[in-house]
Length: 307
Length: 236
Ligand SMILES: Nc1ncnc2c1ncn2[C@@H]1O[C@H](COP(=O)(O)OP(=O)(O)OP(=O)(O)O)[C@@H](O)[C@H]1O
Ligand SMILES: [Mg+2]
Image (cartoon, rainbow over all chains, first blue to last red; front, side, top):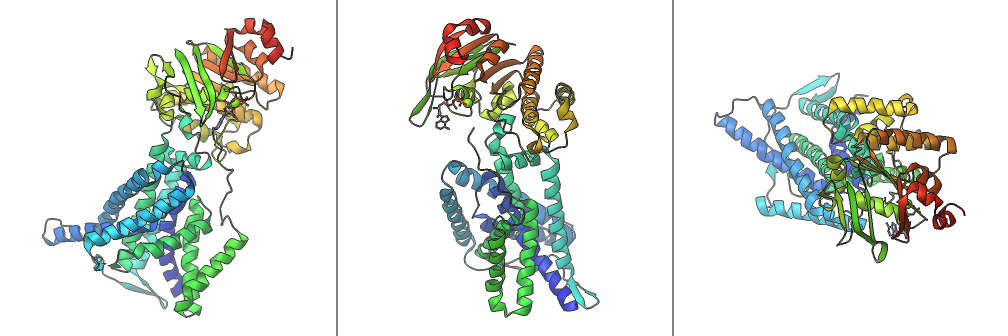
C-alpha cells in the first residue's frame, strides 16, 4: 500500500508536467484546428527563461540588492517567466501560423516542426552545448506520512499546477475572453461578426498555452535541475499524446489525460523493467484510442462551414 | 447611409457579383430578392467584410470607407451587423452567453443591461431559456437569438440573410413583427430573402438580383405589382 501511495505521488508530479503542456496543445487545437508542434520546445524555452530569471534574481539577492526569501524569488520567477514566454508563443503564432491560417493543415504541421528545430538550435547557438543547471531555490525537505515519503518540492509542484489549472478553468468559463475562445472553438468563421477580433483571441490562446508550458518548464527545473535544448522534444510528444487522449480541444480532457499519462508511466515502471516503460505505457494508450478515437471528451464538432 | 457602388466579388475565377449599386438610408428597410445563387448572400458578406470586394468597388457607410475596416471593426466601430444564413449560433454557449459575446467590444455596461432586457422583452422565449445551451433551441428560437445577437452588437444597421428560412408561418410572422419593432426604434434593415412576397411586403424599397446583376429596383409595393417580378418570383 505504501509502495502504491509512494508511486501515486510521483505519478501526480509527472502528470502535472504533462497536463500543463497538454493544455497548450489542446487549447490551440480547439480554436485554430492546428497542432502547434513547436509547443514542446516552447516548454524548453520557458524552462530556460526561468533559468535566466531565477539566476538573475538570485544574483541580485546575493549582492544584497533584493532582500527577498527564496520562495518569493521562486514565485516571481514563475510569474515573470510565464509572462515572458507568452510573448514567444505570440511571436510563433504571428510569424509562423497566422500566414498559414487558410493553408492546408500539413503546411502548418511542417512549419511547427521547423519552428521547433529553430528554437532548439537557436538555444544551442546562444548558450552552447553544455547543460545548465537550474538554481536550487528551495531546500528539499522530506515528510514521512506513514512510510510514504513526500518532498516539499513535490507538494509545491502539484499544488502550483492545480492552482494554474483552476485559474485557467475560471478564465475560460467566466471571462468574456474565455467565452470568445469557446465560441471560436465551436464556429471560428462567424466570430468576427460578433465584433470579436479573431487574431487577438488566437494570440491570447497561444500566450496562455505558452505561459502554462513555461510554468511546467520551471517546475520541472525545480524537480530535475538539469536543462538541455532538446528536453522539450520527448515532453512535447508525450503531452501531444495526452491532448489527443483527452479529446482535441478539451481543457478538462487534456488535464485528466495528462495526469493519466503520468499514472500509466509510473505504474508500468513499477511492474516492468524501466527500459520497457514507454513501450508498454504507450501501447496501453494506443489501445484506449482504438476504442475511443476521439479521446475522453472529444466532441466531433461539425466541420467548419464557410460563411 | 450605406452606399454601395460598383460592387464586384469573385470566388476564385467565378464572378458572383458583376458591379452592383444600391443604398440603404437611415431607418429604412430595404430588401434584395433573387433566386438561388443570384449572389444575395455574397452581397451581405461583402458589406460585412467577410469576403473581399474586387478593386474598383466602393462601399461607404456614413461617409466612411468600409474597405478600411476589418470584419470585427465593422461591427464594433460602425454598428453594422450581419445575421448570416443558417443562424450560426454558438451551440456550446448558453443563450445569455451568445448575447453577451455579441457585446464583446462594448463598454457601456448600463446600456448593455437595458439592451439585454429589451431583447428578452421582444423575445420572451429567450428570457425563459437564458441558461439553456443555444444548440438545444428550436429553429424559431434560434432565429430569435440570431436577431437578438445582432441587436446587442451595435444595430445601427442589420443585414439579415433569409431570416424566414425553415420557420413555420406563425413563427415567421412573430420574427418579422419583432424586426419591425426593432426597425421602428431606429435600426435600418437590409434584408435578403428568397421569399419575395414576404420581403417586398415588409420592405419600403427592394432590388432584384439576377446572376450577380441588379436588374430592377423600386418601392416594395410597386415591385409586388411588377409583372416581371410576379412571373419570376411570386409564382405568376
Ligand atoms: N465560398 C464560395 N466559393 C465559391 N463560390 C461561391 C462561394 N460562395 C458562393 N459562391 C458562388 O457564388 C454565387 C452566389 O452565391 P450566393 O451564396 O451569394 O447566392 P445566394 O443568392 O445567397 O443563394 P441562396 O439563395 O441559395 O442562398 C453562386 O454561384 C455560388 O455558387
Ligand atoms: Mg444565400
